[in-house]
Image (cartoon, rainbow, N blue to C red; front, side):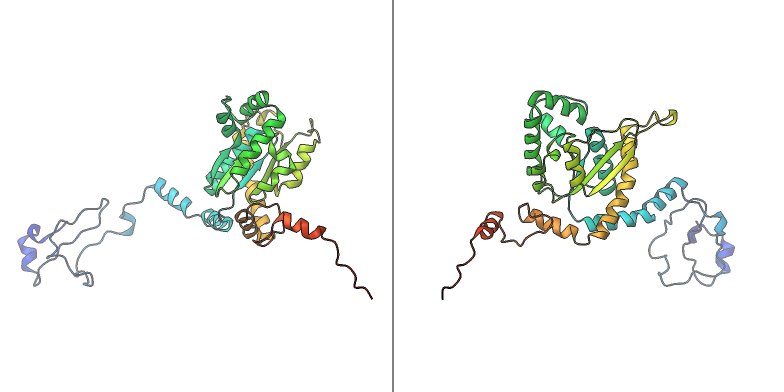
Length: 304
């Protein structure tokens, strides 16, 4: 840093104008400590004769910081931001015959979209004072305590209470309320995702519950069973990450094929989840009144 008070006398004698403080670019940025009265105006051009540091000698940015900056402004950021804006506040319901896998996918989705993950297994386990280290174990203990019918009814109540929640990703039980068609009255207001792992050597039984979930799912993700020595260490989280990439592609296609789906799901929830899906009726419509109108006899024919 060169200032007026530190300049040699001979240099001052050769200058007809006073020298303003100058901050020379070096490898490390130096702070200019001169007073504001000595500083040139923003519009003033720097005096001739001042040295500048070549561009190749300027300090280089931290490579880790540059990498993070590029990642934060990469093309994927804009894609996911546009996707989140398109989704509005419509929630997701993740279904699977593996409760741990559906919960892992819900957590991965929450990281990608910013939605809040919720597990019905954890909610019911807390309500009924049962244990378990994960959703699958929690469901097993709930099943042993309540029985299948009661467990389905209990989860249906939880799903009904969460139908108006926004920006959540609900992970359901493997053999819970989603296997009952009556529960979907409270679920059509969300995007229904089914993730399933196929095993060609041990195919899964074609049960009524699986058929119900497969028929109701709006987006289906199929994973292949890990085989071979190289894939023996694949974890549930790894499977969920693999399924997440496929799900994002399915979601974009589904939104493009159904341009009004977000509006219809939003209206379905705001009007009380009346069961009028996929053709959402006007706000004044009621299922009971609609049934009565259909049962009314035709008017009598006029007599001659």
